[in-house]
Amino acid sequence: MNMKAIYLITGLLICGHAWAQQQSGRVVYDFTRKMMLRTDVAGGGPGMEMAPPPQERTHVIKLEVLFGNNQMLRRSLEDNTPPEFGNDNGIRFHVGMGDDDITWLNFTESRKVEQKEFAAKQYLVSDSVRKLNWKLTGETKNILGYACQQATTMRSGKRNMISMENGVMNRKEVPDTSNIVAWFTPAIPVSAGPDFEGQLPGLILQIDVNGNTTYKAVEVSPKVDMAAIKEPKKGKKVTAEEFSKERDKTMQEMQRSGGRNTIHMN
Image (tube, rainbow, N blue to C red; front, side, top):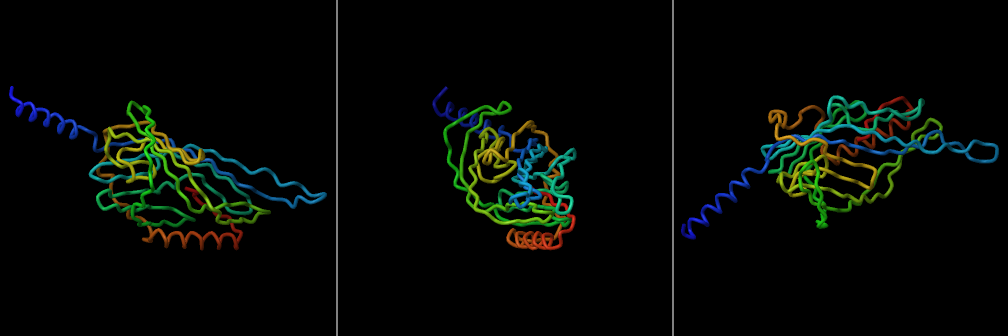
C-alpha cells in the first residue's frame, strides 16, 4: 500500500470519528440553590427581642436540556415542587423556576429567548449570548463516563438582597462577584448546558457558582425529541433591559402595597 492510500484511509477515519461525535441529545440536571431570607427583624434595643437568624432554604429541582440542529432548549421537569417561604403578611417566594420557564438558544445566530414567569405574568426576554472570559485550568475528571475539562471565570455585577422586616419587604442591590467553575466534555462538541450556554466548546455537565448554586448532570442520552427544541412564543416580548426595568417596578409596587404575592426566584 502506497503512502497516498495510507493518508486517504487515515483522513477518512478521522472524518468518520468527527461525524460520529454526538450532535444531539438530552441531559437531566440536579439544580441546587441556597437562599437566605431574614424575616421579622426586631429592634434589638433594651427590653426588645433580638432579630431571628436568617432562614436558609436549600432545594434541589430537576432540569432538562435538549440540544440538536444548532439549537438548545432548557426547561424544568414536571415533578418540580419548589418550596414556598416568606412572611404571612408579605411576599411569598418560590426557590426555583416556574413551570413554563424555558430558555431557547440558536447557536448559529448567537440569539437567546427566555420565557419567564414573574409575579403571575409571562415574558419573552430576547437577548444575545454574552460571553465571559473563561480560563482552561488543565484539570480533568470523569462525569457519567465522559472525560471533562475544567473552565473557570468570574462575573462582576449586582444582585438583589431581600429581607422581610415586620411584614414589609425590603430589597436593595448590592455588588456581587461570582466565582464560576464549569466542567464540559469535548466528546460532545455542542455548546449547550444548564447555564452559560453558547460559551464553551463542549457540553457542560457541571457548574458551581460560589458554592451556592450548582448544576450536576445525572443523565445523558442521545435520544431527544427534536420537535420540542423550538423558540418559545408565550408571553410579552421584551428585551433583557426592558424586563429588568419591569421587574424592578413590580417589586417596588409590591413593596408599597404590602399585599400577598408569590414570586419565582430563578
